[in-house]
Structure formats: structure tokens, C-alpha cells
Length: 147
Image 1 (cartoon, rainbow, N blue to C red):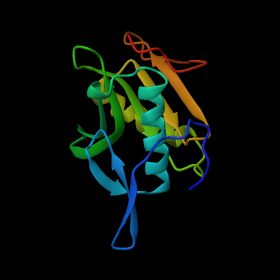
Image 2 (cartoon, rainbow, N blue to C red):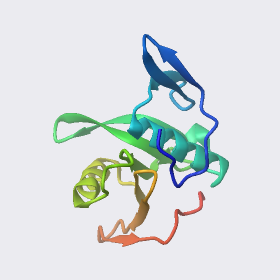
Image 3 (cartoon, rainbow, N blue to C red):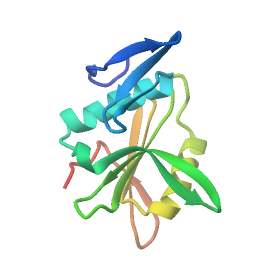
Image 4 (tube, one colour):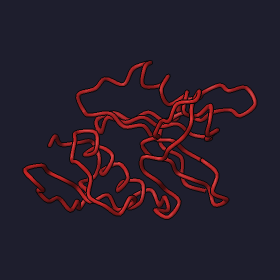
């Protein structure tokens, strides 16, 4: 897998029926090791080990309903009250982070109402704060500290 602009994560990888799988510590099960999953596991490790985000308030592949359709957020970080605080959307390293990626995460936030939206392909990461009153997004120079 491609080297990322994230700290190396101590991943548990195994081969099952000819396919590589990685242990997702948040879902507590092995999942297919795709390029996007590679980014997710490294980013989650970074959030927990280097930024102090609480693993117990994070979820991967969080289901939500959007316009009558089931969708899944890649990672949702909750605040201490259990409300969505940050949504993180991952793409494979070769995927350019463009307006379509931001439109996707903005649609998810219509349902969840998180304060922060983050997108990463493991090479580049963008984070913005959402003003709950105006809906305006302000890009941040770095990820916010967990409250």
C-alpha cells in the first residue's frame, strides 16, 4: 500500500481466502483492506494516538438516512454528550479531493449537524468548521483539538 502523509499505524493485517483484511479497532472486526480503508485506519490511528480523540466516541461506517436513502459516514466523532462533532470522509490516495467530495460530506452533515467536516486521501487533508447559524464553512489550518 502507498505511503501516506500520516504516522504509520500498527495495523493487524491477515490474508483470508486470498484477500487482505485489516482489523478495524472501532468496528472490532476484520474488513477488506482497500486503499480507502488503508487511509481510514491510518487516519483513525492519528486521531487517537496523536490528537487525543477518544476511541470510545468514534465510529466507522456510521449509518444515516439521507432523502430516504441509507448512507454511511466513513468516521463520525461524537462530543462528550454523544452528538456528532466531526465527520471524516476518506478517499483512496489517488482520488483528488474536489468539490464532489465536499458536496458528499456536506449532504451527510444536513442529517448529522456536526461542527467540523474533514476529508482526507491520506496525502492531503482538509478540515472546515461549520457555523450552525449561517451554514458557512471556514477552512482550518489544522484539525481542531478534541474538547
